[in-house]
Image 1 (cartoon, rainbow, N blue to C red):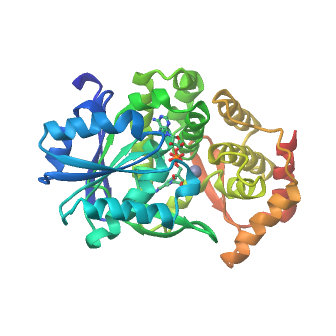
Image 2 (image 1 turned 135 degrees about the vertical axis):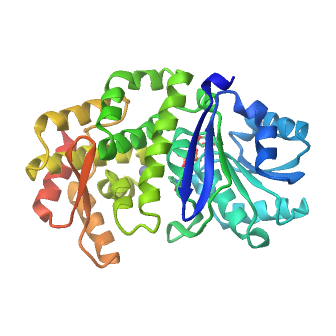
Image 3 (image 1 turned 90 degrees about the vertical axis):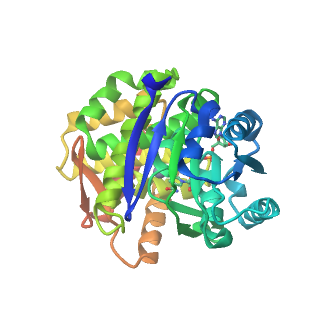
Length: 364
Ligand SMILES: NC(=O)c1ccc[n+]([C@@H]2O[C@H](COP(=O)([O-])OP(=O)(O)OC[C@H]3O[C@@H](n4cnc5c(N)ncnc54)[C@H](O)[C@@H]3O)[C@@H](O)[C@H]2O)c1
Ligand SMILES: [Zn+2]
């Protein structure tokens, strides 16, 4: 088993933890959790899709290491990332008489991770938090940075806290059951990481991304390790989001506006894919990026099964939404644009015409 085990150390805001990546880890997680905490109780938060398959192996393995765990299950989906579901989690964990040392484990995707993390940040004024992510997005994106929280009727992620985990325990074999659309969404963030930071990683994606779609677990393990390392480096260099952490928003400035205008018909990953295509077009139009590199970017996104065009939304509505967000933040729109594969720069001097042209290019 040890052959495939990979450990990536992370250090954010003075707090250190390890991300363990090991196929089959879920069934052997008890001793790993026991090495992180002396607690004899734990609370697992999961959702109605993940829980039925994966909660019991986790409970059993914890029990074998002397840890008695209860399970709080919330209904799956972003619609339930709200106060009502949060309140149910508090009810369950508090009825288990947890203590300040009792860890909360998040078993699921980013929704479960954000909610369980917020519970861990707040219940008893803070208890240890352990992530057991089961979507590619939660593994490569949400497992680093310490952001937790829930949505409010007026917007996403408006209520939350920073709370770093004491460990992130990843079993890549859980990706075998992940719906294909969710897998592709995670790949969008992986592609993003290599475009902003790693030309060699990008070149590997060009030849190997099909292995991810085939769910080659060895490949997925290395992909996850590479991506958590990239995100960790960016976050470690800018823990308070003053500068280069903004690079992680590559594809997201256009993407969030597309997400809003489509009323979430496009998934987040699909919006990031279209956003990266638009940003690359804009970079070429501004004379920053060469056309051959743009084509390579579009090709990899397409190879991952993500959209690269054919958008049927009103481009002006997308542009207006971006402008509205800009007004809310009372500043200029900051675009993260590649000047070569593996490197991006921040531009806040882009004309409205150039932005609209980039959005319109997504129609073809
Ligand atoms: N904290 C952060 O830094 C951070 C970063 C990125 C995203 N997020 C948040 O993450 C959320 C999105 O996360 P997500 O894409 O993981 O969505 P998700 O948690 O809703 O999971 C997607 C779907 O897959 C199901 N699922 C999860 N794992 C599965 C598995 N192994 N097999 C079968 N089905 C499985 C879930 O039940 C759900 O239906 C958003 O709310 C977003 O705000 C947080
Ligand atoms: Zn994203």
